[in-house]
Image (cartoon, rainbow, N blue to C red; front, top):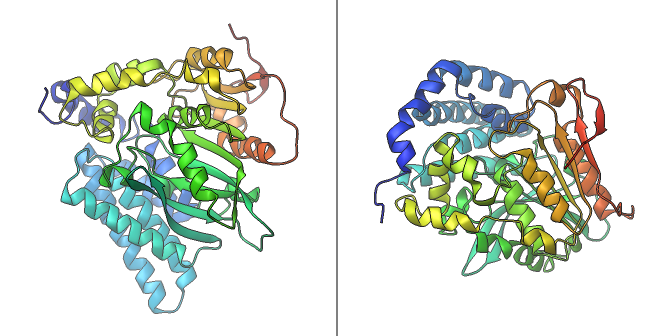
Length: 411
């Protein structure tokens, strides 16, 4: 049994990770500042991103600097509240919550510091929720002997009857607070409720002792729909799921094991069986963090055995909900060939929209000039919960570097 904290590759080569940050910046492997702070959607997020890009020179810096700027936003929020501008203060509370979440990312051991960061994140997010332009509610979804933490967002305005619901999760690095934009959210704009969830192994769920495993995710869908059925404002018969990055694996597994769902749209694929590339070839941070997510941060041998169960090839053959995957053709964490392989095995309509020349971060000319992937997912899922008929066949398209959309040549 391995008792040392983190993976062997991290212990041997983790120093190279900091060297990459020093030479290429904190976003050398992913645009984590953009997706962490982008949901703020005001001028302060651009300033925070620029400052963090220029001042973060190691992984540890990200925690201390994010803490500093979270506290700065909280002071600004309190100043605005003191003068009676609670609505304006809300944008700073929201930004603070994103920064507290970002500060927690480099900590892959459940320490008092990590618990404190999540507590401050939750408190800041709740302060924003109290003045948000739409209804935001802290919820707990019963799951096994515990409960999965979530934030339920309802679209603004009056609603007649039960709302369709999009169940959303992040990947390895984020959390439920970053899944719905402060303003102008694409899913809420379609009149869908959004349950932003920390699933097994994600963010705050780990603090509750709910760890990731291939088996745990197969039961998430039924648990969420059972919870939704207890509410008068949600329609569990018009439910869809969505996830990004490793959430693409998680939510595809959920959909394959939950026949009641109407659709599954995922992006930034992590679909390779056992995650060989992301865990054994890519930056060692991915494996070390996922070991913590599995509750195996000190047992790499057990972790290596656990992830052999991350294999959708059999599960996908049971999929009844339409499936939609968006990602980079040149994704360095999971080859696009796995997207097409699983689509070929899926008995339900399985469509793809892949971006030419884009890696996992989905940056580049195709992503900049073509359709925004989040809008594409929201539009597609909104169609699944409406009266619009489902296409009976799969469609595969590629966004070229010029932004044009062409039919894909798949094998």
